[in-house]
Structure formats: C-alpha cells, structure tokens
Amino acid sequence: MMDGFHYTQCGLDYIWLLNGYTVEETRWGRAVSVQDADGLHQAIGRAIVGGGQRLRGQEVRFLRARLKLSQDGLAVLLGSTRGSVARWEAEPDKAIPGTADHGLRMLYVLKMQEHPLICQITDLLAELDERTHGSAGPVPFRQNDGAWLRQAA
Image 1 (cartoon, rainbow, N blue to C red):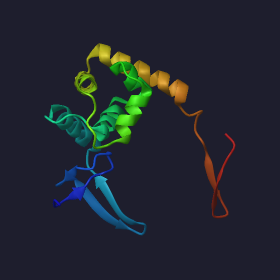
Image 2 (cartoon, rainbow, N blue to C red):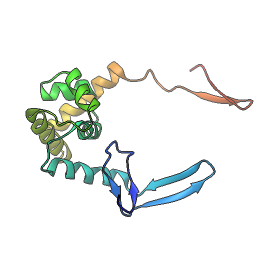
Image 3 (cartoon, rainbow, N blue to C red):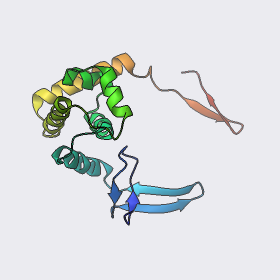
C-alpha cells in the first residue's frame, strides 16, 4: 500500500495520488477534492497509452470515457462489436486482443492531439449516441415536506 489517496473514481484500481488533493470531513463523511481532475485524467491517459503492458478492460473503459464514446461507438471505430467491448470492460484485469489494443491507443493519441479527422469522427459518433441513447431531457425533482419527488417536465 502507498501513502496518499487511492483514487478509484476514475475507474482504475491502481491510481494513487501523492498530492494535488484535499480531504475534508463533512457531516456525511470524508470528502476528497482533486485539483485539476481533467489534467490528472489526461496524465493518466498518457501513461496508459505509453505503457508497455497490454490494455485491460479497466483501461478500455477509462479511455473510452475520455474519448466520449459509447461501447457502440468504440466498436465501430475498432471494427468490432458492442458485445466485444462490453466483455472487455466486464473483465477489468484481462488483456484485450492485440489489434484492438493498438487501435484504441492510436485513436486515443490522435484524439488528444486534436487530429481533425479523428475529432470529427468521434464527435459525430458521440452525437449519434446521444440522439440514440441519450436522455429525453432534464428530469426535475422537487423537495416537498421533506421528501424528494419527480416533477412533470
């Protein structure tokens, strides 16, 4: 075990923060605030794609989320199926196939470098996913006599 904060909120079970966070006790328990979480996630992504080990399910889920793609969208870009992506993510410690590994690393690096074509493709897929699977809009709730109730939109 390391000193610091075990940062599991990113979906990876091996990230430890040595600094750059604050801990505060609240009446609901301990609250942790990470300074520049987006910058941290960028650094984690760079470390993942630059690492020598094959990508595993938990890294697939992390990188897919950073790409803002659904399982369907990632499957389209990798020439795979949504079921395959779902299986990879369901097995967080199992390495994914080599071709998918290389393809996902390449997609991630190009997206982070803001390659115009990759950005256009991933943005289009994210937009299509939102139209297909997105929410129907905001869902309002109101507290009434101490109980939260969903309100008609």
